[in-house]
Picture 1 (cartoon, helix red, strand yellow):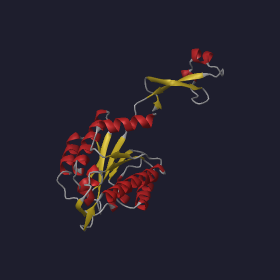
Picture 2 (cartoon, helix red, strand yellow):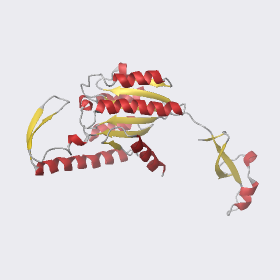
Picture 3 (cartoon, one colour):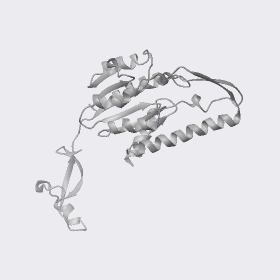
Picture 4 (spheres, helix red, strand yellow):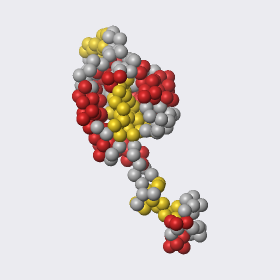
Length: 257
C-alpha cells in the first residue's frame, strides 16, 4: 500500500499527494502537463485471510478427487502462503449450525492450521450449509481476503444472501465440482444417484441424450453461478481437478491484469 515505506512506487501529482518534502524536480521538469510531481512510496501491509468452508453432507463427495481432501489441501496451502508473508489465516467451518470446533480465529500458528487440516479429513459431513449465511458474524470488521469454498448446490437466493453478508470483504468463491459428477457418466446403463443432503436415491436409465442433457445442465449452472457472483464484483474459481497451485496463480494474474 502507499505509505511511508522505503520502496519507491511511482510519481504522483503534488495536488494528489501534497507533501513537498518528496518533490521530484527532474520528474516535474519532464512532465508534459507542467505539473509538480512527488515521489510515492510503498509499505508492507498485513493481510488477514479467511477460508469460509461449506461442511454440509454434499462436501463429502469423493470422485476423481475427494472434496474433504481438497478442503484440507486448501487450508494447508492458504495458511502456508499467508504465513510466508507474515499475514494471518483463519477458518470458519459452516454446517447448521456453525460448529465451534471448526472456528479458527486469524492467527500465525502453523501448528493449529495443520491440526485443523487433519481434522477435516476425519469429520462426518452432515446437515446442510445454512451456517454460511451467518459466517460474516465471525469475521473481523477490518476488510479481509475471504475464500468462500462450497459446491454451491443450492438456490441462487441463498448465494445472494451469503454474498450480501460478506460484502465488506474481498470474496473469492471457490467452486468444488468433480468431473465424475456429470462428465464421466456412461453412455448406456443403469445409474443410481444419491442426494447426500437428504439421503434419497434415484435410479436412471442412462442414454446418450440424457447424458448430454445432464452435462448441459451443469454448464447452465456454471453460467448462473458466474452471473450471481459477478453481480457482487466477485469472479468464481472452479476447481474441477482438485487443489492446484497453478490454477490459483493464473486466477490472481488475471485479476491483476
